[in-house]
Length: 431
Image (cartoon, rainbow, N blue to C red; front, side, top):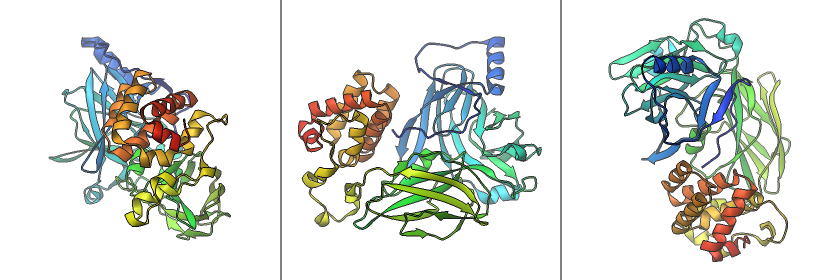
């Protein structure tokens, strides 16, 4: 599973790691009402969880089983669910109906979520993440929440707006989304945004860095899922401020070409996302400096970025079969990390990541999952999430999940691979 990206939370907010157990924390009567009301409005006590990913007909949805009453925050969407009792949540982002919003004088200020819960009335409140700066929040009525059902759309007045979320009471679940008032919102004011970088598959003569300009409350997992090519996420500090409909351009001294020369920031909330810029680089480029400039050439974001090692094998699935390089010679000897060299295990995994994804078999992946679960490197939810994917996605999520556990977890995966597939581990120089 891809590790959740850095979020922009109130520094005073306490996020508690959630140990999902079957202990029954249910309460009743006045006790329950007081707990729910307090949790709904108190943004300092939330339990963070990583949901299970479900994919059907090309659409991704999230599932999470709340172990009892409380406030639970999704690590991918940043949304908070306040529940009265033990419940199962199933949710996903869907396409906005722009004509419906415009007829009400509104425009999307976040993703539109389709939320379901078999336990009737278990969810009492939602905290929807926003991307506003504090200055804009001083105007009353700028942010509201719409509730869309088969009967039409209603507008919900927030109970509270923090510097990161809008809190509303929930009576019936269906479609919920955050909106701006077209009259109240002054579009000359910026929003909190972020710059996200992805490295595309390497061609023979160049490699491409894709640049996304996004509002901060966009789900990065959705951005990844919308990509058609196996892009690799480049972690950096993404925070910036962006203005809707303003033109932006890029500067990158290492680039051979950047396209387009400039582009407008359009505040897209998906569920499909396209990169705003492409930076073409020489194949041997290891470090780049990327700068985002507004239409007055003022710098709004600039970072020096280290690129991961080039992997020509990333392109293999897009090359005609007759032109593909045989699997046994895909990893150049100079790119492999010698086993005898003292290199952290997570770095060793990263050096063979693409080849592992291309070549590990489905049965081997299932054995690796069992061994990692037995050793406590991954938990039940991570195991179920990875196991439900197609082979390549399963391999990608498995190696990335374990790499993010650090050197110790990575060492366990390497040892398990040497045991269940000694041939592949030797070819990857991991044995």
